[in-house]
Amino acid sequence: MKQAILKISGVVLASVLLMLAQAQAAPQSIPNGPWIQDDQTVKLEALTSMEELQKKLFDIYARSKGRMQVEIAGETTSGLPLYLVKFGEPDPDKIRVLIEGQIHGGEPLGVEACIEVIKQLAASGNPDIDMIRDNLTIWLIPRMNPEGATYEVDGEVVQRRQNSQPWTPEEWGLPPDAPAPWYYRSRTPPGYDINRDSNPDLDFELGPANAYLLPGESALPGFFVTPEARTVRDAYKELQPDVFIDLHHRGTNLVSEEDISMCTLQILAQVVDLGREDYPLDPAVLNFSKQINAYVYQRLLEMGNSPFTGVQRYPDVNLPGTTLGTFTLNGSAIMLYEVRTARQKSSGMLTKQVIIGLMETLKGLADESIYDVDPADYDEIPPAGPRIGNPHLFFE
Ligand SMILES: [Zn+2]
Image: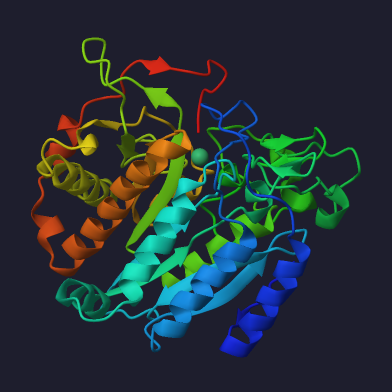
């Protein structure tokens, strides 16, 4: 298993930047498309390339006066870097938060939201930001799926859900005809849905002794066969976050049958059924998750007659193999963001609600106001309204 942990000094990062600049000369501008398609390709006019991501992180780092660190915490099968941004090291006296963006390559606003949050956290002169940094340790992986995010068709970046990694049973000591995990897509080029590849047993390693578990299914854990899932797992084990937040997109929902305005955001505090004997979810952890989700819902509603009033609860799921599922089963409170997929002209507003939600969460944890929320308030968040758009899309 490749696990290159590389501390980035300005000099090293600059040379990595140059390398990537040379490797990525593909055009980024492509026509609009209204929906994420079944294979999760997405077409926006301006997608952040790996080169731009590198440059933005480097620029923020260079101005941060040591308030943040950037590391390459791992790399994809094809060698693309997985950036880990750190505000502080693990400290038992601080609340620890891990934020993950774009684990699905075709869901690009997560990386944009992460970059803006990193920019705000790295800045000086704001008492709220100082309070957040004083009380919290915050780590972010802005782009968990660089291969999906840079996926090209005919020389154009279209992005897609999966990474670009083939199934290699021999790598795990298995016979060539061993079935691939159920979340592997074998079409060309093949790849995994990284967000089904986690396992609540953080030390799980696929091998002959447990190969009988293959191919698995959605209500069961994944197999940690992707370097991306292993990288976030390793960061998780090191940080042991109290809170884990994951940033996604979904298609378009209406607010309700009566109100046909579009839902801008769906959120969720629970991704594993309560009462499972094999994977018991701690009710106290669930309550903390509900407090965080309800807090964000209330903060967005308080903004009054804004585009942010169409917030709903994401439909129930039971997915222990997602990063959210795996980490909440290991004791972290969780929050899922599912932002409406949009044409470019709406994406700034849609990203903004995530940035506001994330910053309010960090502030609410730092000043402890989040703990005053009644977990039952979560149940007041309206359920998902009727769905419109691509009928092939059934989960994100
Ligand atoms: Zn997603």
